Every structure is written in C-alpha cells, then in structure tokens.
Length: 316
Length: 252
Image 1: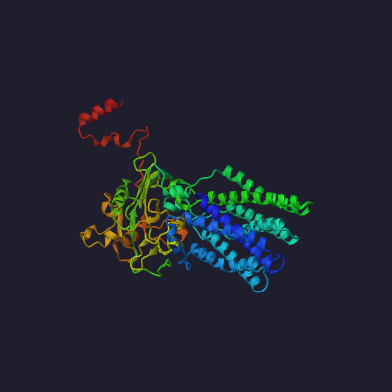
Image 2: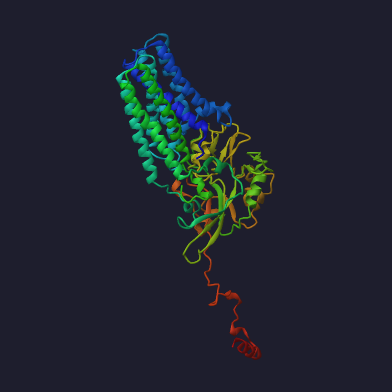
C-alpha cells in the first residue's frame, strides 16, 4: 500500500495525542497529577493540537473535504465512520476535563469522572482507527488480530512519554509516570514484534491462481498488463518495498521507538539534575517520534493488496 | 445506507468466457466511450498526450500465461477482462463512511453517488479485485455501473439494452443477464460450462462469473524428425501407380 504522508501523520499524531489524554485522565482522576493550571495548558494544548492536527490532515487528503461531515453517518457498518463519531464524542468529556483542570484548577469529583470517561473514549477512537485497517480482508497483513492492540499500545506508549516529559518540565515528575512509560513501551515492543512475527509466518490464501481461477499456484504468470503505463490501482495499492530495506527499517524502528526510550527512561529517572533528566526525556520523545513514523510507514509499505495479483504478483 | 440489502430481487451481472476472449480490448474502449458520457461522466484522463498517461477505466484486460502438465491445458495464454463483479457481500459498500456507496435492492448493481462521495478511497482498499477507480480531477470514486443508464434505456432498441462491453465484444465472449434466476441464459451457461468465482476465499460472493478455457485436443504436432507433422507425406494418399513409383525412387 502506498504510504501516504497524511495518513502516517494522522495515525501517529492522533495516537500520541489520545495516549496523552488517556494518561492525563487516569493520573488526574486518581490524584497523582495536581491540577496545575500552566501544566494543564501545556499538556491539554499539546494533546488537542496533536489530535486535531491529525484529524485535519486526514480530512485534507480527501477528494472533497467540505463533505467530511457525511462520514459521521454510516457508523452502523463503517469503521471509518465509527472513528469519526468517536473522535467527535471524545472532545466533549476531554474538553470539559481540560476546562476544569485549567480554569477551575480541579480534577477531582465530577472532573475525575469526565477524565476517566474521556480516557475510555480516547481508547475507543484509537481502536476504531486500527479497525479501519484490520477489517480489510483484501490486505492480509492488516487483517490481523494484533493490529488494534499494537495501535492502542503505541498510542499509550507515546502519550506516556510525552506526559513524562511535560511533568518533568512543570515539576510534577513521579515514579508512577516513569513506570507507566516503561511498561507501555515494553508492551508495545512485545506486541509489535509479535505482529511482525505473525505476518512473517502467515500467507494470504489469495494467489494469482485464485485471482484468475486459472491453473495452480505458481503456474499463473502475468504476460501483459492492461496498459503500458501505470494506473490508480498500481499507484495506490501496488507500492513495492524491497525485503532488505524492510528488514533494515524494522531495525531502525525497534531501536528508535523501543530500545532508546527504554534506556533513556531509567537514565532520566536516575539523572542527578532536573535539567539532565529533561534533556534525556526530550531525547526519548524525539527518538520515539522518529521510530513511530518509520513503524507506521512500514505498516503501509509492507502491506500487500490482492489487486497486485492482477499486476504480476504471485501471492498477496 | 451502506448496509447491504439482505437479498436482491435480481442479480444482474456478467459472464465472461475466457475460452473465447481474444484480448482485443474493444470492451474496455467501448466501456470508456459509453461511460464518459454516462452515469459517472466524465471518465477523466491525466496527461493524456504526455509521457505517462493515466485515466479512469472501468474495465481492463490482463493477459496471463498458464502452465500445466495436464493434457489439453499445456502452455496457454488466457486473456482476462476484469471489471466490477457486483458482489453480493460487497466490502466496498459496507466500509463507505458516507453512504455514497450502495447496492441496489432490485437488481444488485453496486453504484457510487458522486454527490455524496468524499473521496477517502477506503472502498478501493476494501475491494480485493481492484474494481474501484479514483477520479483525481473530480475527487470522487467511480466504478463500473453495469451500464445502468443503458440496460434500462427505453430510447434504445431492445437488443442494445446490454452493457457496452457486452454489445461491443466482436467474439461473443461476454454475456449479460440475471444470475439470480436459475432459468436465465447466463445461469444455464454457468451451469453448463462450470463458471466460477474469482477469489472465493475473500468471501465477497461475486455475481459475475468466469467460464474456464476449454481443454484443447492434445496432438503431437511434430513427426519423428521434428518436422511439422501436418506437412509429412502419407503414402496412402498417392493414388497413381506412377507417382507411387516416383515416391519410392525419391525416398531411397
């Protein structure tokens, strides 16, 4: 699949933004983060900026952005529609929670409940995003039960790294934030490695033989394509990635997204000065951001669509 | 609504005979010609006279080489036209977030409402067959309409009320009809010739069916010396005694 920038930016940025909102809701509700106004401005500002920029970027790549509201209507059958509805609904409790935190400097009582409700809606939204891909049977590498857990874990992990950095900058750092970051980054790493293992082992049932109904697998070859030039299907679905590049990029993703943050988090916790801790956390966030973009780029570039079977591929 | 109808009254579709198709691409050309003025008009092109022309086509002809050890199936070239299969369980319809994609209850045709489509392209990802075509100029998805504006068109003579690809096929490789009616001509053809679904494992239950190429008579086409067998003289063919004598003399 063609790795479009808008979709990579949307899924990574909104995932991290929702992850940050989840942890703000949870830690705020259980009283482990004080409702400090300027910390709230920074944290909610960043979270809503990431989420909103992501949603807007996904809208701008549409052929008709002005009709985007129509995408909220078909939630009965469409995961994309469900995601849109969930994203809009999520703004309500998280927005009220942010108002309480920033203007009233409160995150207890009703605001705690709003924070937790918002956290649940954030998770549902990310789940819906992942299901857009996981529900497509035509792309075997996406039609995999590990795709939604990976999306959730990566959103939670990147959100927790952002929260650890912001808490450090505003003097609200705690052992719990480090612990949550370590656990979620580790969980995301385990799930992502399991996903790569799973797609390496399984193969699509569809082959050039089943796509044409002619002959046996391996004995049906494309002789002539329909045209001499490319077409929409080949441009959108026919993206090819050399296996050796995929392997190297996976290593880059594992190091930047998982290994470096997992080393820098304890280092930051043990660093003597708060400036050094903040610096190490900035590095961890930057490294994870680079790794996440590579991971998401690979998610698209490695996905093979069955339509390629009509354009010379033997298996999908 | 992008929910699929539980059943459709009829199941209009195509039956494509791979034994007959000669790969002339006339169906694709006439499809483009009709539809660029039809329901989803226009079918735009990009860089049409440049180095890398692309455009919206609802029908494309691929050619495959098929190897086999089975007698009658060795070394075939099969021309393979492909357009929307108007699936019973069309995933392109259910993924649509706007309701622009729909499957008609009365005849099973899958269509796009170009006034509602937001151009998210998700339906083209969901279709395993590559039947959907994004029109980058208009920013909406388009697809084969089974010539919905031709098959019901009362201004046309009855024999012309078939999809453009069917009426233009010079070889008679394309058939149109109701595949939900076991008594229809197309259903009988499918039953007689062993018509099959493409990628049944994808679970889309396509309406269109493909008829497999027939087995050829397998004859050894060469004689013992490797010369074309058809040109070898056969002694029994020579009636004249004089010529038989000449043949014997020359064959010495």
